[in-house]
Length: 178
Image (cartoon, rainbow, N blue to C red; front, side, top):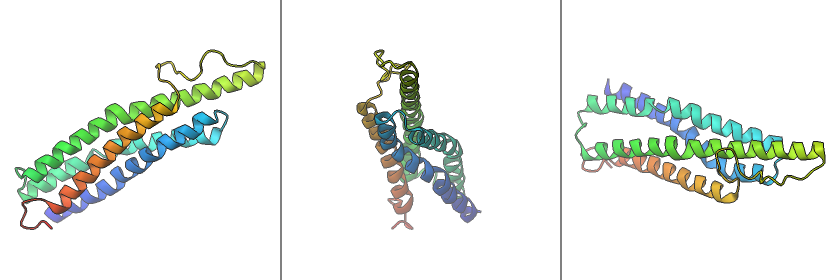
């Protein structure tokens, strides 16, 4: 049963966490491109897709710690330091994703959509926007600084997952560790 849980745990990690790390890493540069050219519908669509991937696979990602817990129980290693550290880092990674990455992606997506709407309005009316379309209703400035902050939080999320992966492979103190 241990091998079954381990296989499911590893597959869930690959299928659920992999897409989030990639899509979240692609989002900040995509947001910079979309903000630089508010009329680029393809850039805005790409951002929406990347954000949807992050949201959906973050939800599926709950299977990773659940299956990991089942695997650890069947292996009898719930009290091992490497596992406790991994579970703690997994919790922190989830908190970073839910509290820092996804909300900032949403804010930048709103900023991109607001900038695109302002550009369309300006084209239709023949006026220029003087309202500072760089800010959204949430008050987040649509500027490269916001994308840099998002990239930093995404990097932290990815680094936490890389650390968990290393702990899962090396398992310090384990007689079966590398």
